[in-house]
Amino acid sequence: MTSHLMEARGATIRFGGLTAVDNVDMYVDVGEIVALIGPNGAGKTTYFNMLTGIYKPTEGDILFNGASIVGKAPHVIARQGISRTFQNIRLFPALSAIENVMIGRHMRTKTGALGALFKTPPARKEEQQIQADAEKWLAFVGLSGVANELASSLPYGAQRRLEIARALATEPQLICLDEPAAGMNPQETAELNLLVGRIRDAGVTVFLIEHDMKVVMEIAERIYVLDFGKLIAQGTPREVQNNPAVIEAYLGLGADALMAKHLDEGGDDA
Image (cartoon, rainbow, N blue to C red; front, side, top):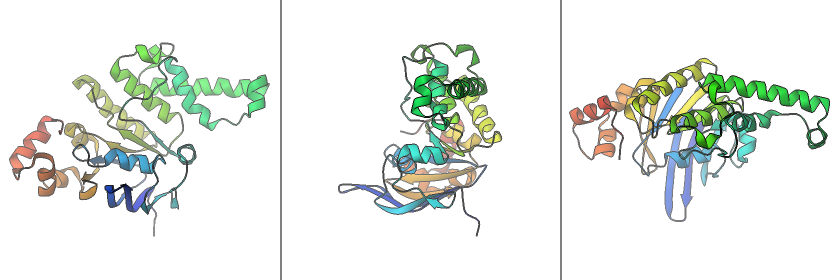
């Protein structure tokens, strides 16, 4: 049986008496763009936090390349090939754009502490390669012209793309994007859609949380829907768009036409 790139089996997490994610099964295969959607408080970011080692599931298992990653530290999971961005941007604001990306790339360095301290020839050579790789990823996300500008001085949409560049610099097999279109204007959102496609074309599988339904319907090949921590639907964009449980979860209504209008207009859910 062929294993999935990422697979959750009965993934559950409880905080005291609250079950934030409840017995969730889902998978992502190599080369896919998969979206995880649901109303606010549905458990989406909590699921990403389990997948990336910030939280440990109370029950169930999460597999990556066929091996369990439950209980592993976030930096270990990142080295295995899962990177992420965050719902609230987490850059180093006092560092330049290229320095932010180089930090992501440093995860793959081989130079030890002594080599870095004494700046040995191998360490200097590796640092030059790290900078070259960072420049490559800045160009990939369209930020070559701001490499030496402080991250804090960049426009909001550029900061979003910078965080994606830093995640890509870790050489992931799977990149998890937590609401990458949040706060973007229509032009920035359109550019993001193209960028996500280029990421997949570069050989990186994409798993994203997104509230902008227009983005989801345009770029996702499969969609999972959470509501109150439970998986209530999955399928293609059209299948999910027409699912009565999804309509009820988002709008509290059984009106297919209203849901279709909401999705067509790309409205954010509450």
